[in-house]
Image (cartoon, rainbow, N blue to C red):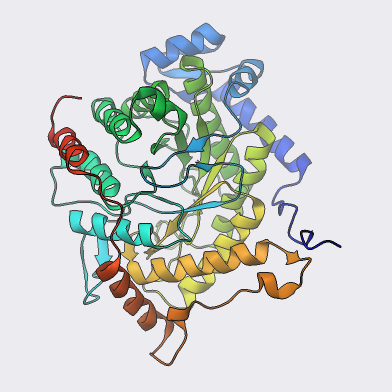
Amino acid sequence: MTHAAMLGAQAPLCILTDPDVEQLDQAACQVIERVGVSVPSERARAALRGAGAHADGDRVTIPTEVLRTLLAMAPPHFALGARAGATLFTGQGSLLTTDGCCTEIYDPEDGHRRLTAGADVAAITRLVDALPQVDFCWPAVSAQDYPVERRGLWELYLALANTGKHIQTVTVVEPHLASVAVEMGRLVAGGAEALRAAPPISALLGTVTPLGNDRGTIETGLLFAEAGVPIGFVSMPQGGSTTPITMAGSLVVGMAETLSAVAVVQAVVPGAPVFLCFIPTIMDLRSGDFTGGAPEDTLMAAAVADIGRFYSLPTQAGVNASGAKLPGWQSAIDDVATTFTSLLAGVDMLAGVGMVASDSLFSCEEMVLAAEITGVARRLAGGISGSGARANAPELPDWFTGARGDAVARAHERVGELLAAHVPPPLGAGLDRELRRLAEGGPA
């Protein structure tokens, strides 16, 4: 065996067998063809009718052969450019990001629970820039001290200003804001063609479960797609509430929603880069709440890798989701289970480091600890090197060792050190001025 040879963990972990995926595919296609989905955008409906779909008001049904033709137009991989960093590509390992968009945070200095603000968006983004395990950035919390009507643009600006890594916006969901975000992306990339070739921004947009869509969201997606900005559609089925209680039933609804959304985009902008995102859960039967961190959530999220391979589409899943109210043993267990499962399954993008309390609260300490867990998971998933197991053996970071209290206390110290010392790549005065002007409301 040569030194370059590897043993173990080379084939993806399959949550679903091939017959499983084929059965889910048949069920999802039947839903799309017979029940249909809501497409409240005349432009999108017209394109779908032109491709062979049928529309009755907002309700659109897509014959299976038409759906498969449209899905085949989407590229199997795409690039994620960066303002000041290496371009990433889907299909070359699981990429890690934060999650969004929390409205509360444990203050990184004194630890008390409070509402989030723009300064938190900036601080968390600087942590993203400093942590090598985190590959790209979602604006992780809400900038609640900025005007709500342009808050998504300010969150995008604050993220761009505080990291050189790729940014994925999750709160620009209206067309008039998306046009501004595209212009911001062009400025950062250096022009329209550079934006298309290696876009420094991408977008995640949500369906409305079950089987619905928002008009503004669809038209936002089409605007991003026309500019070459990668877009994903996230389905968040809640078993027992918005979808059937079974995991298979939830997956079918999620597939029907996201696949039909991909079909919408391809009907209007053939070849546009798109991806599927699943953030599923099972309803808490005692309260009706989102659970977060349940075993069913972990399995359904990781299953998107098998589904993506079936359709040759990039994928994203929620990880690190925990019902724990604070970082600790429960969140650690959830982090290990969710991250390792989706990573081994081969999900292209993993979103979630930093959240606790069922994705409602942000903790910088949780973010640092979860990033380390991801680093360990990646080393384990790499298998055994031909030069000996030591080459891939997980090791604790220097900041984690020593007798300075428990893991959370040491993570708190690490957060303070990074926020005090790390300086992200500067925007430059001219670019900063132009991005601020656009975020404030200047013409795109």
